Image (cartoon, rainbow, N blue to C red):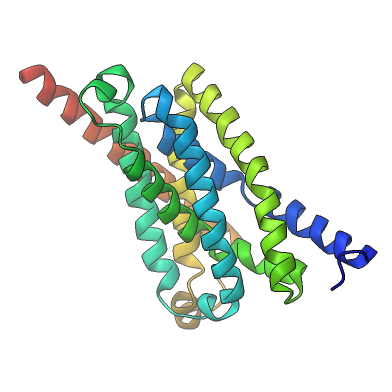
Amino acid sequence: MEITTAAFWAALGSIIWVNVLLSGDNAVVIALAARALPAHQQKKAIFWGSAAAIVMRIVLTIVAARLLQLPFLKIVGALALLYIGVDLLLEDDEGGDQGANEGQGNILSAIRTILVADLVMSLDNVLAVAAAANGDVPLLVIGLAVSIPLIIFGSTLLLRVMERYPLIVTAGAALLGFLAGEMLMTDPAVVERFGELPHALINTVGALGAALVVGLGTLLQRRAAARRAAE
C-alpha cells in the first residue's frame, strides 16, 4: 500500500486507534510493574517495557489467528495472569523506599513482568489489529510503533494516580484476575468440551478470578508483614 494514498493513512489510523483502545489493561500492568521500582528507574521500565511489548505484539499479530486456535493456550495464560496479579500485590506491599534501598526493585524483573502480562493479554487484541492492517506488515509495524508513546503516556499517568491512591493497585490486580477468569472460560478446549458459554457465566468466573487474586494477595501480604514484625 502506497504511503501517499488515503487508504494507507486510514488503515494506519485504524491500527493506532484499535491498539490504544485495547491497551488499557496493558497500561495498568505496566504501571503496576513499574510502581515497585525506585523513582529514577520507573520511566526506563515503562519505556523499555512498552517498546519490547510492541515488538512482541507485532510478531503475535502476524501469527495471531493460528495461536488463538491452540487448545489450552488461554488456560496457561490465565494461570500466568493470576500469578502476576498476586505477585504485583506483594511487590506493592514490599515496595517504596525500603524496597529500593534493599534492592527489591529490579528494572529487568519489571520489564519481564510487563512482557509476560502483555503476551497473555494481547492474544485476543491482536486479532483486531491484524484485521485493521489487512495483511500489510510494514503498515502494521508503523502503526504499532506510533502507538508506543501513547501507551507510555497512559502508563505514566496511571503510575502517578497509583502513587496518590494506593487502592488502585488492588483494583489493577483484580482486573488481571478478572481477565484470567475470562480467558479460562473462552479457551478452545473449554469451548469444545462445553460449547459456547453464557456471557453471564464468563463474567462470574472472571469475578471469582478477581476475588482470588485480591484474597490470596492480601493473605500473603499479611503473612509477610507478620514475618517482618517477628524479625
